[in-house]
Amino acid sequence: MAIRVVDASDKHTGYISLCTHLDEEDQDHMRAAEMRERWLRLRSEKHGMKTKVALEADGRPQGFIHMVPIGSPISGMMGEDIMVIPCLTLNYQLVYGGVHGTGVGSALVEACEEEAKKMGFKGLAVYAYTGDFWFMPSAFFERVGFKRASEGSDIWVKRWADVEDPKEPEVRYKFQPIPGKVVIDYFWSPLCFTVCKEVLNVRQAASEFSNGVELREYRTDEPGSLVEFGMLRALFIDGQRKFWGYEAPKEELRREIKKALKEKGCQPEA
Image (cartoon, rainbow, N blue to C red; front, side):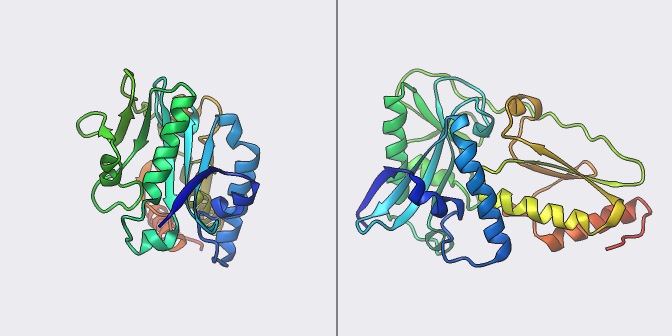
């Protein structure tokens, strides 16, 4: 597959906002894309974020990558002189089909490295994952020259000059209960399409339980939020963290809320 990488422009915004799902017609999917598109147009540059798109010879996009200076709230890391890759995404058909060896991911990382060097940064960093978690697989980043920052860490680094390893921020969360209510604490940023879908699901599920549920939202893309919260995305129900990897499904959220209400001795109203 012949690939060239370009800086994202307005003509690519729809593709990026939809997270490559250009053929999607689901209403919730489109609402999430609109939310993300507004953020990309109005807020992403304030974080110093740059986006690059991989194109086939005929101009069709095959994937994109974001990069942002470390220390920005959406970088999710603390440190200096490093650019962070918060997201690298290939066309969803390739991801869902388990297609490897297209060269798209490698070309996107190489373009990020070239850009970071021009800007005077000393390395790239990424949160990458092992096991069955499909997003940002560490095996890929290891193949393109990244090394684990420290034993057991999910941070992987590729450096071309002397620079200290990035650090994970300290998670700062203390549950503040509300008598007689199930409390949902949701930390989120429109950087991620999956999270945009998730916040819609969380809001819908919470609204279905009348006055029995209190939803508290915290925006993790606001200045100072990385130090204040130490996390980009997290969902807590009565202080217990819940995580599905993909967006939290409405039915699962309803089930968890009903369970929490029963534990409080309340009768679920939804």
